[in-house]
Length: 268
Length: 309
Image: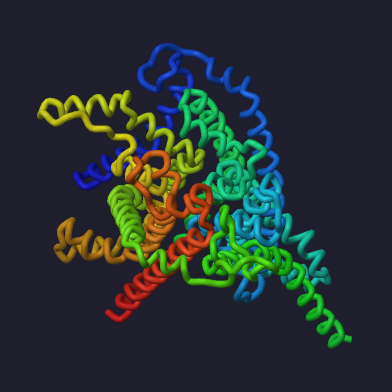
């Protein structure tokens, strides 16, 4: 190893440390027997206990779960269709509509949906509005993953199916769908994580009634920081980690679907 | 017979195309295009007396007031230097964040691209992994690190104290906002850079070395110019979301660290001036579109330049 490489390694180590130290600190303090995130006092599971006795937080977690499952279902169905359509046909409008929400600052989608729900649909903001909003911004991510999978495939398989007399529906059900299934599942998991995590769009489309997880976390951070925040953070990190491992297993060609998304974004 | 089946095929294909592209198209027209148009329309309306909007048509028997359409929100925006200043500040923060991200991401991306193939995916995954943890939590983590009771604050203030400089607060400052912005967006810079650098042909560097180029010359005259498309797309991916971000300044910034995003948020949840909030959102959209257009143009022109030379 020469000097130049040593510098590269040093710079990389600094960046990795920068990426991981904050998260490690959050996790460590979630086990700290002190109200302050300052010095280590002793090990405790008190903050997790407090979390599981916090009814509002549990309701928020349940609500967020319902939202994430519904939104990821909708986004997976519509996103898979969009991915297929964009790959198969020369479309002009659909790709713009699918990929723009992914590239835009989230606040713009949040604001426009808020105005739309209140003015046009006359909808009381709540779970339904959040589910629709999350579906809207997740469609693009699913479409990107599905299209990436299709792009890596040999088109002649589909032609062979058609030549052998399969109808478009049969070709889809018996050939295309099984082949893109890993991407579809990865897209669903990705949507689920995005939905559970999303703060900005949720912030604008939430109602006043039901507590939602990211909003609850935001309130805790803004109003009264206790290590309970660390505990819920640690649990969420664990959840996301499991999701990513599953998604990565399914998409063995790529390290994770998020890498594909970013690659896709960078190509544009 | 054959002709008939070809015709039927074409019909089936059209039906399939319609069935596959129809539902997502319809959904996005209703929940993306229509809301965007509503936002444009809202920016030209009068605010209601108690938040919300005044009706477009004056209700029967109402005293004449502010009904119909107006460009008042835009006049308001261009009439007060304060808003131009906030936009300028947001551009400044976005540019600084982008530059810091570039400086941090480039060596890492270069190292990953030059590592053994079997390591690359793992190294990329390690960059993406923290980015998958909850967005608010990543910001919150810096509240702990920069907080007044943290070791870092203690250390910095001890060092500064030795020079007789009074204690400084790290949290709730422009510095904290910048750190948070960089932390939240760094992977967006690493990945496009890596995707680009990975494709470089190493024989170019060997050739440059054979021709007597030093390490710096090889970097500045071969690697860097070739990586510009990656630099531009990474920069756009960082710059654009930073421009609209309100959570980072909201959580890590002080009262003076207001950016475009915070201004917009306040119009909907604070002062409740929807038309002005919509006008601000439109201005932000225009800013984003011009930045994205510029990045694409730069990337294309560098590619064209290279093709010509």
